[in-house]
Length: 152
Image 1 (cartoon, rainbow, N blue to C red):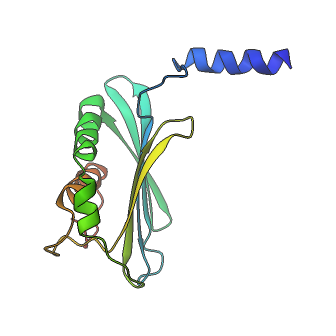
Image 2: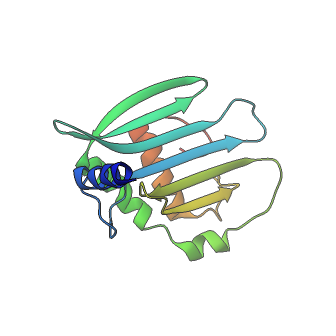
C-alpha cells in the first residue's frame, strides 16, 4: 500500500499537478455524420514540449492518423476562441434531428474534469448557426489542416 501511495505522489509531483490544477491538458474535437459512413474526424491537442513545439495535434480521419506539432502561441489562439463560445448563442440555435452531423468540442484536465459541447446540426451556411462555436471549430480544423465542407 505504501508503494502505491508513493507512486501516485511521485506522478503528481513530476508533472507539476496539485489538487488545484487550473490548466487545460487537452482539447478534443469530433465530427460525426450520420449520413456518410466512415466520415468521422477526431482531433486531439495535447502538450508535447519539444523545442518550440509545445503541443501535438493528432488527427484521426478515414482510418488514417497524422500528427502535427504546434507552438504554445497557436494553442493559446485556439483556446482563446474556445473561451469566447457563447452558451446563450448555442441555446438559441438548439435543434433536434436524426440525420445530420454532430460536432463535439471538449476541453479538460487529466484528472477527469472537462467541459464538453456536443452540438447537432451546425453548418457554416446556416444563418442561425452559433458563430462563436463555429469560429472555435474552424481554427482547430485550419490548424490541423482538415477540411470538412459543412464547417470550413
